Length: 360
Image 1 (cartoon, rainbow, N blue to C red):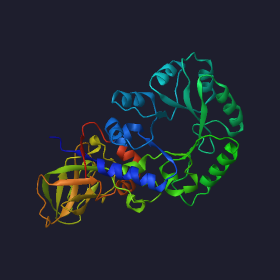
Image 2: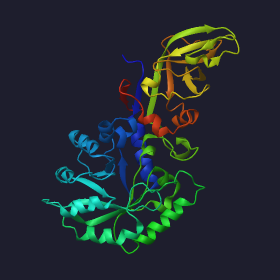
Image 3: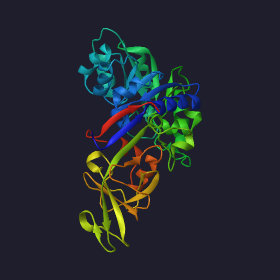
Image 4: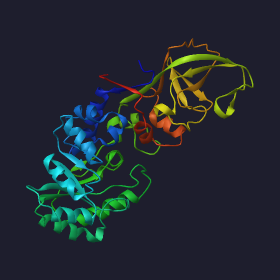
């Protein structure tokens, strides 16, 4: 038995998809499964999101893994394709592609395909990552409409840069620019990621792209899942493997960075950055043991962390379960303590962690 486990609550996953539909009732749902379903297990998660209208991944290998796993829903490649030799693969597997660069459009125009491919034209309205310049929208749109290798409907898309911050005006600026640009076209529109879904209902459009919110995590600045009616899907747990008595003034861990201010007890727990726990989690970052919060002390090492449990009055024993994040300990809070974002924590869970898929 592996000591560190990621419990994946499939009921919570289904609940979050239903909650997404409740928040955006007039939009189709493109469930985002990139990066191994945000660390939750690509194929297994997809198999339990059958109520979604389509899936979205970043790269073609992720899409192929879904097809190999028996998933038949439409799959959108959010980064598009990277070489003209990818196009027959897209066609054979019913993959849909983003077009965000002229090289992609040229490859599509020049390809010899047996049937057309569904496309999404991505416009850069301010993210300045992927997408065509707004000034070239009419040209790209007309070329795609005329392209024999593209299906007649050209879906239109953009991506928000600051939707996680309700006080930032940039989302409204991007929304207005996009709406003005596409006003004359009768095409399906897709703008809102998780933050856009939760914070900007005017941006829901014909399609929404929930990612982080499906896994029960808030994408908003300072947000928590419960504020949005979401349920955490992953519970990362480990075990207490030793209890040590420490005297006042004794130093703990690599670099001796933490010194005990009093006589106390430490619980040594079997998890570390080798499992994906953030190495830079600060002293005091909470863990849950026997229903109570305790703070980590000393450096996070590859395989172990020390936790100050005081006089051990709670009766903690070797073998007790420890929650690192989950329903009782928001991953958003742990991310804040580590100076990062919850996306990174979820995606960084390593292969030596065992996955246990449960229902409730």
